[in-house]
Picture 1 (tube, rainbow, N blue to C red):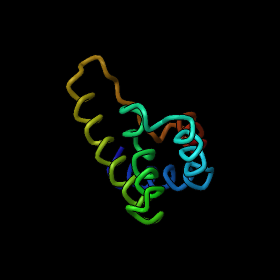
Picture 2: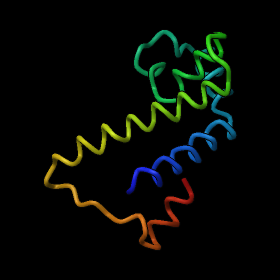
Picture 3: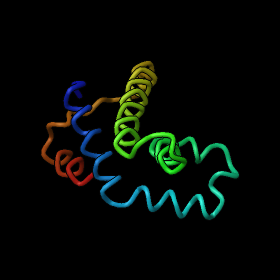
Length: 104
């Protein structure tokens, strides 16, 4: 997928995550002990929301940082998968895949 399209999809997905209650989800998880572990609190989106809840950054900054971090992660995945000869890349322009991707 070209980088501009991927970036647009990431923006839409991150916005949807926040619109659908990511902050409330993280608040509940923190209350349930999320901060006692190390891995989950570092997850994309969770780390940024925790920074927001701690008053370290604004909500807008948490959203933008989640988008930036997700783009970096996608680039790392692309690099990693490109080395594996077993991987067959599919076009996102296939009608069946487009409907699946739109639901994300």
